[in-house]
Image 1 (cartoon, helix red, strand yellow):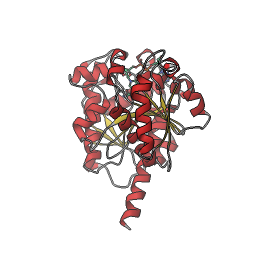
Image 2 (cartoon, helix red, strand yellow):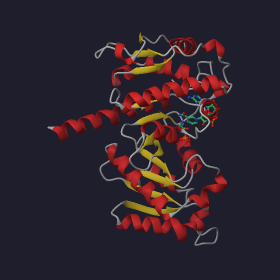
Image 3 (tube, helix red, strand yellow):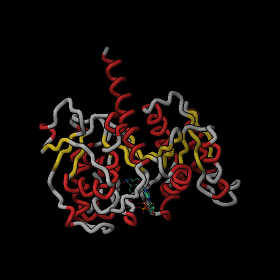
Image 4 (cartoon, helix red, strand yellow):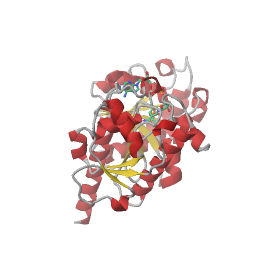
Length: 331
Ligand SMILES: NC(=O)C1=CN([C@@H]2O[C@H](COP(=O)(O)OP(=O)(O)OC[C@H]3O[C@@H](n4cnc5c(N)ncnc54)[C@H](O)[C@@H]3O)[C@@H](O)[C@H]2O)C=CC1
Ligand SMILES: NCC(=O)COP(=O)(O)O
């Protein structure tokens, strides 16, 4: 369960009430049962869960989701729509527990309903984002990054949660090559056999031959050429205001953008109610809806569950594929 002051409690309750979600995986939900009940009341659903105190008490085969009740937050102490250290601590504890369960093999994937980064930072001052925290808890053998996924189209980024004024200085041939490599590997892990990747420019019209900036000529273009030599099916840099039009038409499986909103605006306009964020580069999938905590509508029961549904289904599919792959390799 994510941030208790936003729409996470009602989204968790709505998800657990969906037959399709209960059938997709053996669900272990981590939170406080009182917070789930408050979310269920707001959403006007009645999720049927088996409440247990720890994973050891969850039966291996169960006809309903197990709810691991950490009993660590009374929802009456939370003001909806307000950032708090208490709310951040609740979400952080749930997330850390889920990551640790997955790291020790007791879970195959992690899904979280939205976190509020300001609340997370109050609870854990070194918290920048979910990627940094997951690396802190689980470690990662190579680069880790966020992907936004809408149906069959992926968006990866070279820079993510950084100030816009820093983006140009953070771009390098190596950073872009790392982004291409991780995008290719993550798409393959998700079952796309031969990923086609488009790389966006940074500047208007991809610099227009150097008229509006030289990053395309000096950094992005050379990185794309190097990636081609290494065997990746990659092209660009393309003007970022039209690359998603081509990608939406099926020309590419993924677009690598230079910064967060360059991709997110396009992806969210195309399908706000289905967008998923995947944290790639970890030994197991970590998924969340692409939208956030929506403090402005918290507790009203009107939050759309579509993106949370898509996040859980993607995590379940990726975990199943991975388990099947492991079984096949062992046979
Ligand atoms: N999955 C996650 O953990 C994510 C967390 N965040 C965090 O969420 C916080 C708030 O971020 P914002 O930029 O304000 O974006 P936001 O997505 O929370 O809200 C933007 C607008 O979209 C609406 N909205 C969002 N989700 C909705 C849903 N399911 N149904 C109907 N309307 C919905 C909101 O009401 C608001 O008007 C920040 O701390 C951010 O870091 C942002 C994106 C993803
Ligand atoms: N909590 C995940 C998250 O913030 C992802 O949001 P975004 O950076 O993909 O917008």
